[in-house]
Image (cartoon, rainbow, N blue to C red; front, side):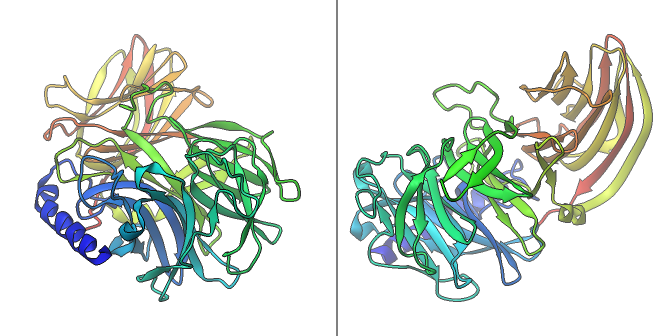
Length: 469
């Protein structure tokens, strides 16, 4: 049954590829599958010379996330930038009533071997189980489930029998030589592995503060960071005590990405931003975050892409800093630069700086202007644009407000434009905004402006960006 199901799924993807490839709004330097719906980044790892990214995927359509059919798909990269699409890793066991494969993570077991943890969802949304999957080769191409039964289920090994029906999205973390896993919902339920192979687990306690989907929990310097896919995505910095399974969130906390806005509608028509992240450590000890960018228009044969890789660090104030991976510089093409452009109650379109696949570094010095900023993807007549505007203690990025104060009177913006995708890193990565926008196909201009006073564009560097395909 699984083989026939796979064949149908592959045929559905193949049929959607021509439409997806024709879409002029599809990003060219963000990874995306050949066609259909990409969902959460489920697991990421650096292993034997490759970066691996696993993601939830609906092979049967580009208009929904696959409540009945989602699987785990897989891509790998040598350089974190150029990705190779690989055979699918996990398919639902339809003959056992598995409705879909929910999100999860990948980690190394006590023998240094990769292992996937994911949530098995029954038809009819019955009790959920946590399963383990291991590779059959060092290239991580072929996979098999560890056992014929789940590794964790409600009512066994001390796990509460009445565990929340939303029990899902396992994330494995390690501390003081011990291995734990936590989940979305369930009031921060934590289990601990009792063997090196990570096949035997017992209830360990509750990790206060874990809520939201796709939790990521990891050490950074001498602190611990909890990232939660809420709306918008948020983080908390604190200390973790493995002896008591306690997370003391006495550090900083904040919004990691404002793409969804701070008050999204309850009907979830918020889908234009960053979500479903997964953070991992590479061989250099860098903590790298990959996420799912969602909110693209339907009926185009595809939907969803992976965010650009972000390096996570903590600053002196214990704030979570996100900076674009330096490897992205290899995609830079033609370079243009400007210095010291004074703006006095005017808007100025920048000559020879335009495009729909660009990287822009801009720094403004605030004067007495009531508002100032930058417009990208601007129409020829100037009437339409994607606007980034600072005024009255708030930075507005394409309609999404970010509470912000310029640092020493300066505002720094690091902007990536990839057709319909916009990623903006603010003030050296203190926060970010990820958006999906649909300007006109020929709206390519860039302008800067100041309103009711003066401001200065201290510097601007712009590069055309190359395709990764």
